[in-house]
Image (cartoon, rainbow, N blue to C red; front, side, top):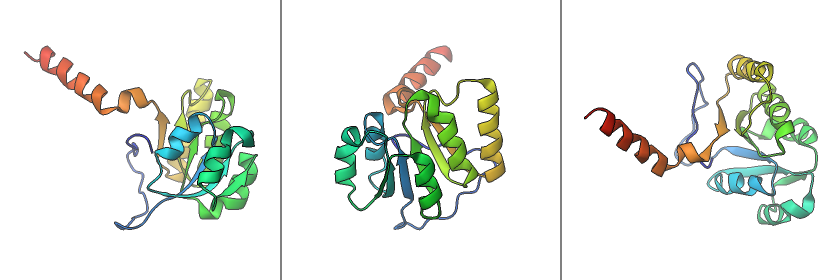
Length: 161
């Protein structure tokens, strides 16, 4: 991923050896999705999805071996057994729906902000992550950037003078 993946307490990720890679799928492959896919370059990209094949063409071509889809529901249904984790970089109104479907299939999820549009949706996703024991993270690159961490260190050092 393009930032550190936070693993909630009690979530056990299957063990990976030093040479093993995650099988990744991207829901949203053009636009912001390209950044997320680039952040997963060291992993195995097995499926890509985008409703606009023109906007996603660059990633579709770069990952020629990955299965291509226009509908994330079809991708998850058909490729689910081959996927370990999913990135979600779609228009805001589909974030929670795509993340929920992936979690119900036991997939770890990295989803762009906003994760949800209501407290209820947030609670549903929290419950799904716990129930299916999957790691999740909402994209907020500004706060996971090493420079931002350094700013926090500097501010904390001033507070504790």
